[in-house]
Image (cartoon, rainbow, N blue to C red):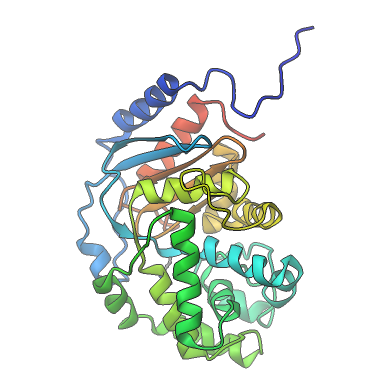
Length: 319
Ligand code: DON
């Protein structure tokens, strides 16, 4: 019986194979027009729906890509991963579990029923209520300290100084009454750990941070690399923090479609209504795709399909 060596990188994952997998996925889905831009945040409806890019970063820091990999868009819910990771890093996994909860709600990402059902307990950090709670827990005594902490964390994951897309921030800040209600309700259940209005505003700002597919792939690769950015070499979070982070991504990264995602891809992922999705192949690579048209659950259609294709071509499904 021939045994297969337990190597870090799957055999056959050379640069040529990776380039070919990305190219295949890109060409296969380039013409797909299913889904539609998010429009509950008014300016997101105006983003060019044809944009489509795929980027991948391996643990040696090599960056691959095809299509619109340097078009900037708002990170939206993908930011929740990095704020959650920072909270785990600062306060430990037990604090996250006890003060927020880590089970999937199984409901829509902005569900108020999810809060009400369990009186503010078991609200997952990758959907809005738990994410606003995570923002409220982030280290810092003031709005500015908390915000700088979040922006610095995301910048370290990306390996460059990220900035806010101001039109997206303003557009969402003017229309985020539902998130304000979520924060107030959590506060009523004593499950918010900072001022509700300021927590919602910091959360809105973190969702408006501008990234491109390449940034997201580096951020995902930092998770794949156990918390050290493979491009800059900087340790951003501890390996133990990454383990907990990936577990929550696996169970709740694509909202109420997380089970379908894991079934098809077998990797922890996270989506945002800006059209970005990341996936993490631990010990192998981080991958990201961007395309604005979303399905019913709020996940980019082309990003889901193209990542699935690349992961399957590279035989990187964890299971
Ligand atoms: O709070 C919101 O609704 C947005 N800032 C983020 C939501 C999001 O990305 C959900 N994605 N599918």
